[in-house]
Image 1: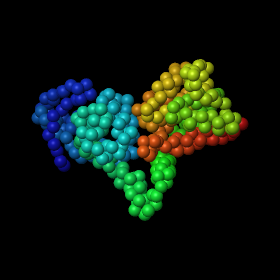
Image 2 (image 1 turned 30 degrees about the vertical axis):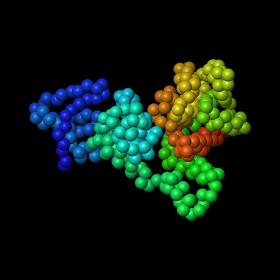
Image 3 (image 1 turned 90 degrees about the vertical axis):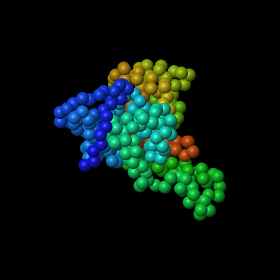
Image 4 (image 1 turned 120 degrees about the vertical axis):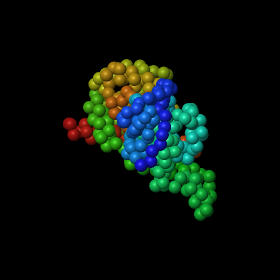
Length: 323
């Protein structure tokens, strides 16, 4: 068993705690196992391996479980890591810290808080996520050029956007939570009125849902925020209603405000968003995560639209079953 002598410091409030203990005791810090012997702390690597997730899905789940208890700086790192997993996999500690707006030492603290020996140990999990992925766009573009298939700029754009849409849908199908999806359908189907809130980039999603719900006879209100009247459009929301709130990075502040106001009035909230750290996630009775791929900085909406139509048609089906 590999052991390493270390000092004990507690970073949540940037304070240091010295340990003076001459007994053979066992304690846990940040879910890491330590043996205390004669005033020193011995980290047991085997214990670390038992605690720290070795696959990305388990790591995401662990971050989600601890999101509410992480200190502010570690929350900042967690948010950046979940939104930029490729950068975590390939970047240096210095570049990642700069982009996340923290010090490199914070990356180490974040890693150890999750049970890893250090940042490189955590980074291995992000790198393993990429091993079985489909070829990157750069690789595909190189293959197209080698085969003489990239003759036109329009063809390249079409291939790039189509590939991003395909990746978005495929990734969502793998990660979708069936229980959360069923819960969302139930909340929407049981609502007297469904309020659809999605502004800026998210507006095409809610506007198409409004169109489909109108055709399917589902009572709804599309909150479009025209003339700054979003709050007036939700004035009559009550505990009998459900709000479907849609927002992605960078989040619409008006969507956040309308979601929180609806929650305060007792309405149920179903949120479609891209991270547990999204500002519309805490108010949600159930939230569904959708992380869209992008091409040249333009994010796809394919997975979000597929989810939106799934919810709409499922709600219509559930209501027809009730008669």
